[in-house]
Image 1 (cartoon, each protein chain N blue to C red):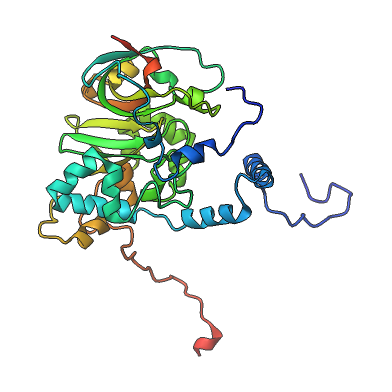
Image 2: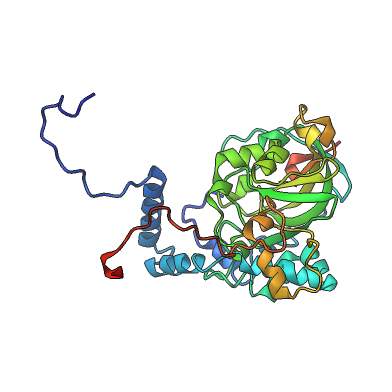
Length: 122
Length: 240
């Protein structure tokens, strides 16, 4: 994405009348994971920008839903929309995220989203 | 320290409003964007005007409709964006951009509570919020305090809001850190049997839709507050 004349209205052009993330539908190919899969969140480097929270790194959760296709935030932050990925909503037990979480509330959980590059089979 | 210690003359304080660094940054970027022709000053004004028309009423209406109509409830859970159209919100074309809002995107999930699961929503990144259907977020929703503590100590934070939940209820925190925005569909409370959609919508307040409160018959955001008489009332001359 090193274009000398970068079109800053590029996003508006692809999303008008369609919406975002709807405008990226069908661009991510076959999803690697499915509902119910156990996944671990990778601890990848994030030098410039990320939306993958530190508290989820290394944790194991369950895919609750395939939510949409979109360029990952790490690319989109630089307006690089060339390659979309599947996004997954993953549910974690709170105890998995915070080891000191009270055993009395072992059922408590947290749900949040990741693009495919952040997930590996657990 | 006494006011009389210093010798320089007293100057009146300059008549300026305090502006934060981020507000200055926003103005600078906005003016550059207008100069570059990305949008016009009128576009910006129109956008601001649109944003100020938004509030939580469409989301309250969505929940009330879903409580009354099981088919509509299924649609809400399956496709929040499609379900929003029934309450007058088109996530794509309602905003003046015609492609949704630049930071809220067009993906709404309605998180359905059950007697055994209570959802509550946060954006740990900063302030993602389903604005097209819920309006502007309350100030506390954007504070680092709420954001960092809700994910880690949800029961304690909910207790501070006055919501104490039994240990056998699962609390599920939704962290909207990507393109999905969430609203919570609480359980319809007892004591609302036979109510109309209008009556039900009244008790689904903003906080119930974020998940830090549950709806209760008689508790609405527009309820009349009790008026206390002043102990030492002011007497106006024109009263005599």
